[in-house]
Image 1 (tube, rainbow, N blue to C red):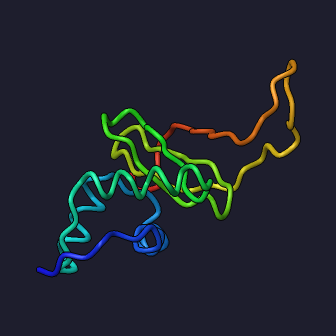
Image 2: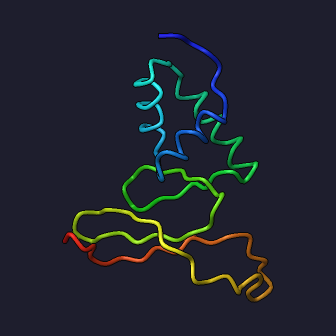
Length: 117
């Protein structure tokens, strides 16, 4: 396996192909592509992307954070039975400030049953 410095654009490419990825999944995909990266480098690249507001970090209660691109704002629906997560269009664009709190972005998660369940 080749060992090269990790670039944030590699992670962006992975997130473009996969809606939500955990660090574990990112490492697995990098390894599958026969490129080895250490976990610390992946976390540093993700921190850089977070500070540049290119990705979001979320937790859906599974114990591990997942990352996604911020290129197009959307919300999520999660199936209560199979735990499938899908992106849905956001219907809440009007709030920029609430009670003196300036809103930079939000995440809304809806729960229910998918068509397959």
